[in-house]
Image 1 (cartoon, rainbow, N blue to C red):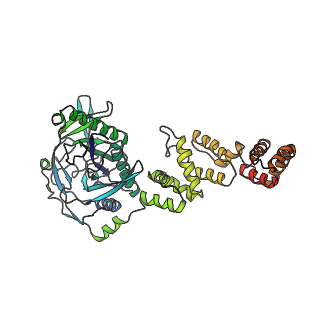
Image 2 (cartoon, helix red, strand yellow):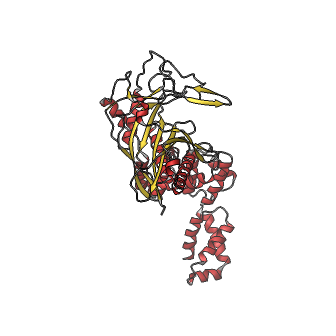
Length: 475
């Protein structure tokens, strides 16, 4: 066992996919010309007043429902005062004392073990803009300023980078299944701040925590946490813990794989929170509460249903529900008439096993209808599983195609005509009377010899049917 225990808490910012910003009617679309989607309200100009986006509140309620959290019918928006070039008002409208979402929990699984991670709160706030640094000057794009964020704050319940990543992936899956965010990490719609500290094993005290800011890749989040844990342990063992581990915000250098000091970490008092005088306290009426609580089937519920209805193993059900895209693809295959177990195998093992690099389920060109057709042709014994793999290789290579046309053009259709198969069987048995006699005297293993001879003399026949008819003939 390690001499130290790692303590991790995560703050995740999820950009809600409302059509307009949280306090004004500017569009939230990504990739627009810089500073196009701005107005006096999101620029913080004098006299412009914010108006709360009802849809953002509804999406927050949906998230709270999904994690079995307390939903506060009354909440308050506050001003969080700090100045950065990308925050034109010099304060951020956020929630502090009374957030919209209170205590909740998220179940994760790591190395086959279940663990519950507490969610302290989830509150609504506005995003800041974006700084663009070029050579010796900087630019500011305020299109993102005032877009709605749901900040989800966990308890410090995670004890390893593996647990942190499992929590983040589960959280990512939840907001995607709810449909409240596209959670695109490359575009900043799902980003994380990690609070990391260590303590001697067996100690219950919480020591100095370091915040690693603005992480937007599962891979880099894990690397950043692991580096920071190692840095803090080395400082402790060198007797320089109090000198080198201070409460601060650090950034992760992805090129060098190290964290670097950015600034001292502010506390709540430094932000001088006070209720925003331009916004009334939020009251969630019964209609909005009811609408927000109507959520779709969540990943864990789907996985349980797959196990119960389709006889799929829990691990495989977890794989199928690990992402919204995978779940939709699988369920679409079922809608096209493919079997559940065949769809599982040919989607998760065969198709995904062939996709490398940038070639993903979304870009491979093989839609669910095509893969479902392949599964059905195998289940119908029109082609063998081996032939199915050959066809799938071609589909992946040419990014799609028609399964039935490939079966014909590649000459892979199985012969299921009993008369034709029996004719070959009789020919093989007549040519090997000595082996027939040996089989009838008890050498059952010779069945494999006869199957091989039939398959050799009648290419494309259904192996399963050959076995059945051979047994009948030999008896």
